[in-house]
Length: 357
Image (tube, rainbow, N blue to C red):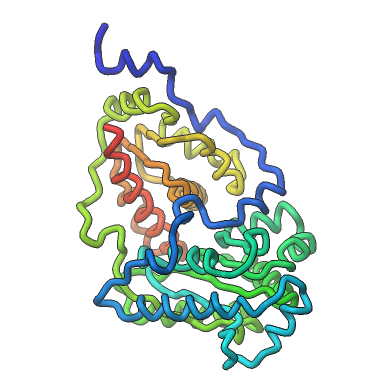
């Protein structure tokens, strides 16, 4: 027959994420500690501050000076110890910066720009999410992670999380060791929209939880609304299953999975491998999208959403809209920041997927 599906099928069936179980060696985890592909080309001069938010312009200025100050450090530990011995008022700036702001205000863009602007070889700079850092410790062990990162000029931690006390203590201990080795630090985290004053509370929580390291960080507040919604149309509504299926067959390199089955599969794959799970995938097509059943499943989905967003993989979905994935109890709970971030990022990827139709 000559339906629209026939010709695309001739190019081969779409892949399935549920059929993948990647093995990721530890050296790949280290090599991948760099800004994700989405942020390869970002720089301070490509960040477009919202004219209504002076804090965004200030953040660019402060971080530019911070990067320039790192130029005084040397690759050797001794050189870096001399730099860190300077007084806080020295031109090199603070030993660390903490970007505090709501989701979608461009914190990751700024953090990646800092990584790019820091005058050091890529092998002497590390960039990863809080989850990726804890996964690295799990793969290498604490002491080996200290040895691996201790010779770096800069460590950038995106989406620093305070909702797991054990992980917070682990990362705080790691950062303390890295500071002793002369590594400069930069971190971001999220605050929720519509929560007046919550940004200040988040900064206070961050500085309290890292305890002895708090003196090394300058909190830098970044106000603003989610740029992914600023001046952009509403996210497209989910499509019918057959529409998504046809698009998957018509798109070389696309994957096609039933959403509940994918959620079950994620439980069998360590989150540190979710990036590798999407290797070579050009688009993720999902049928039967529905409510996420429990918190453990929801947190795994958050990690997958982050990896897809980092890699700019569009997501075409059939079923429930992404803003209804997480129930009201989840959105009011302690992990709500993660869920709002996932909704925001999946919505952006859904917009990108319109080109598949």
